Length: 585
Image (tube, rainbow, N blue to C red; front, side, top):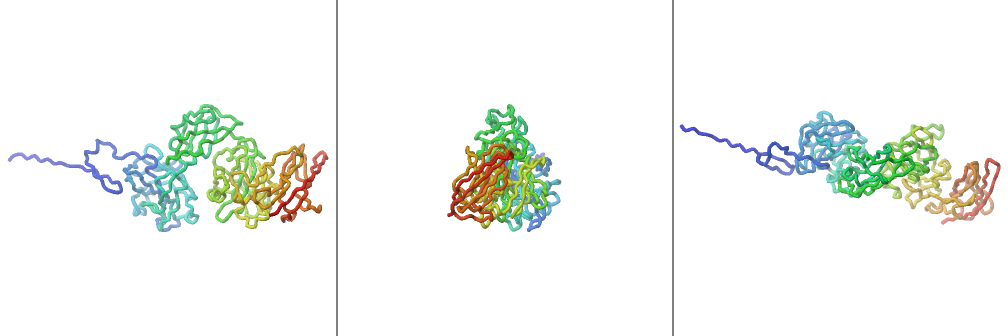
């Protein structure tokens, strides 16, 4: 028998699944032992759903989970990848994600409950997803940030759903670094959509990059710069960045989501000087938008003392669904760090001061003349008050107690040294105003003492009833005349239209021990309003009359006489009188 040689030919076929179809590739197309998986770029694998508070249940299991989505057409190996929360790392099991596919991430004990909704990756140790918010970062095996979120309860946009049982879903997967404006509460009947297309999915482009939101000196060489969104290309443009005439030696990311950076300067910054950071136009976010705000002023701050910062505007009776806000102003010539400032409520009966609340968790420069408004409901306040300046209105986690009818607030520094105090009540509003909800009271003269009720007035209707973050609608900067006694105008029209609603009675006295009495008389010579009684002027100041009588009612149209007497601690006194017309519509 002849020997028979049998040849067995085996053809290996590599099957690759790309979510939409199967592709077959013969072994000859795979070169050697190369990794068939391509590394993912930032934004190609993204966190697309967050179930942080699964109870009370809707219809999904009572399990915390994250959903990740691949927006790439190629499969990605997640071996060596990890989630980062704070300084803790949570490594993926051995798993791959196909192109345009989903994986549900959860604790390994919850995989039996969630696996029926889609492919699931169980972690032996899974980060706790806090109800109020947390920063979660998705990193590849080389430690590079691929995506991340710093979610908050406010992202839900629905107070009822934020209480639990509903997930947060990403609206437009093409703009994964567009944060708060691109996340919403799920509208799926089950409470979420793990492992499938999000229920809120829609076209929602990221079309603007606000840019710099804060700059603060860590010392005389290092400057911390914060942005509104993750920045894609800052380090490569370091040679084009300037701080006045100083160049940048190095840039280091101080935030895993690339929103904060430390810049080392090629030189030193000094006190008593305001510096300006300038960025080139090429700085972009991950959507390719150029930064709108590319310059930011800052400086080395001084310790805050009494008289540096004062209350300037209060909303203590907001509209339903809105929150209170407080505005302060830096009336000094110094740079102030707002993280050094605290505010507290004070019991008007017992005088007891409540636990102070910080107005900024981050270091932030408040330059001379700048305003700083803060609230627990920033989005609603900025939307409601069209005269607001959004970049000067800030979100805080807690506000002091502010009753709707009356209250006392105290401003203090970190050492609990009192900076300012104000007592407010609803009678400080213009008497024409009946419904007072949603109307702020503003200081007429920011530098005048806050405890003088005559220095407060309702925000004007034309301004939208509030001006958080910017100059008040009733602001007065009446110039100092050469006269000891003067009026801002010869007429007053107290109709709350923002024009001549208040008469400013101005004093420019010598010395510091001056006290004044100011009385308004009608045409018959009868006193109708005691504007000031033994009011301490010091070296001068302003007093305000809003056209009302002693009983709070608005006086009739006519000519009135403003009679003022000033006396000092040396026994010298002077008196003046001037006429003013009160006009009515």
